[in-house]
Length: 421
Image 1 (spheres, rainbow, N blue to C red):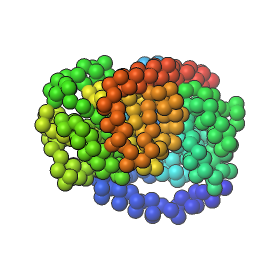
Image 2: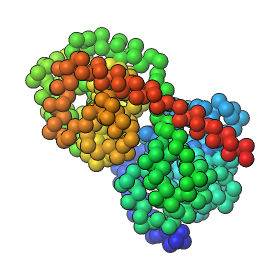
Image 3: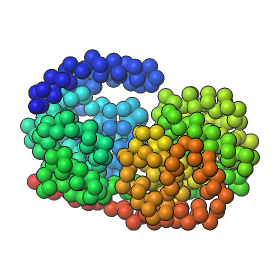
Image 4: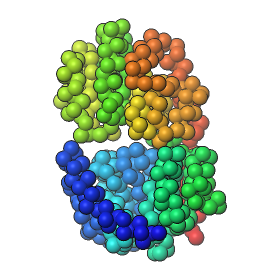
């Protein structure tokens, strides 16, 4: 079955490359460092590196505390971080600079993955969340490189998506020593996918161990003083196409009740920055952008955060946060950042990528679900009018965040055991 899979990958390669070209039209960084996607790059001269694969920004953020723990525990081991997206690459450089070696993960073709492994020469592979590549896993197994899937999650949707490759995926999972699942539900889905029970450990979600910038709250308070302490401020973070217009429409409803209200909006992907800026101007809002203005003034109604990795201080400056990717069927994004700062959270109905975390927050009262785009404005307005409700939701959100920490410590103990073996 893996040979058939590989044959299909070769047949699909022209379409995959075409898709990369088209993505590069909207986001030029996709047109750079092409050779790495086929395993061609200068070997860094490592022997016995620790390799962490994190597909994009969300996975890099989830892996940040683990990578920092590995740097502390194994200071002499070279660290290799691979991503698939340029935004993931940018986040790696922002967090770690030259302290780690970044490279794009190659396509799952035998010659590409073998060349990749020959150049980074890992002693351990740590795959973050849900990246299952049969040829890559087989090549690691053949070379005797132990593998862990850390912070492992598997939604019902992903489980259904693998159904046509169930045998190939089952064989790939047998190459993995440990699957450190986020939750009991994720562990059960990995068993349905073909993993053996003895491979799976429920370690918790590493995103709860995320580092909260010590100056985030102070930076948020400082910004509030600059643009007006008393005015209502809400944030729409990690928004996607199909959500920004709903957010702006919601803000029009808010302005009817609070003419001095401020919306902070942060699109998920850099290629959407200009599109959102154009939409804000077209709808007649008074606006500022981070790139041009730094911070909003008291006269601005909308502030566009057109930069990556800056959400935490703005969450701290907001009265509440809507986390995007959830009004459209993307699957949602990280609700823990506002929760860590004791901010009430709103999400749409599509949160399958963060189902366990989001459901816990909703069930315990730290978050609420917005049924549809049309309902967003009413829900934002209702919370802005209720100071006591917002404070209660924020306290609960922070309590959930604080209670669930500790997954990184459990994962590093398993890493230690594998390396000792």
